[in-house]
Image 1 (cartoon, helix red, strand yellow):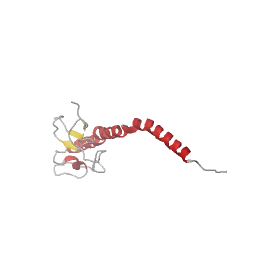
Image 2 (cartoon, rainbow, N blue to C red):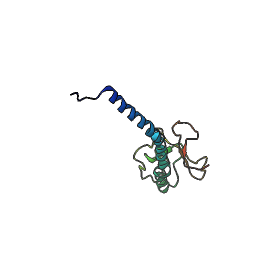
Image 3 (spheres, one colour):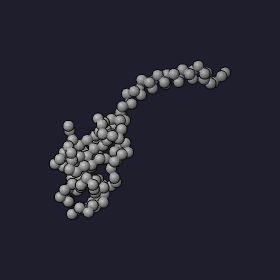
Image 4 (cartoon, one colour):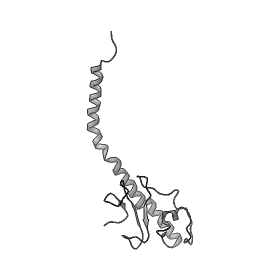
Length: 133
């Protein structure tokens, strides 16, 4: 008695798996990009924002644009009472690019603009920002 699978049986199993994958995969396709956007928003609105607020409490002002987020890692010349580092490492967005920081901000002139250029790496509609238009 032969105890193996025939080629037809194996092909049938492969076809069934392919059909199931074709039904399930589209549901997950956009999820990873959505998760990246949420991570970037969390960094911008909570993690980096908290570090910037602590820096401001210690030094009386946010870091200048020229100092950037590096001022949260090492004391810049303008710091009066630096008690950092305020971050463990230089923050990068989920797409592997540095966050953009401007102080004073163009959109938030009373404080700073902090944003990620998103997946495409250029200013466009996929940017994750700390201001609302």
